Image (cartoon, rainbow, N blue to C red):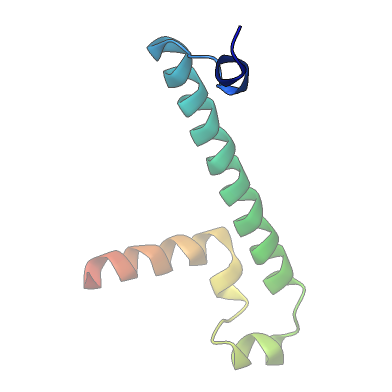
Length: 77
């Protein structure tokens, strides 16, 4: 067995690559969700005066407020 064949990664089937890509996409989506969730939690921990400084209100942080902001942003695009 030559050294080059030992150093090469084993070849995978198309089905295995697709499964790995799907799992990678799922993990990336979950990671993004956790990061966003942490961000919303951090904003919720701020006082009202600090929220105003960064351009948010307490109502904006509620789930209904977030949906309203997203709808308004989509209307302007």
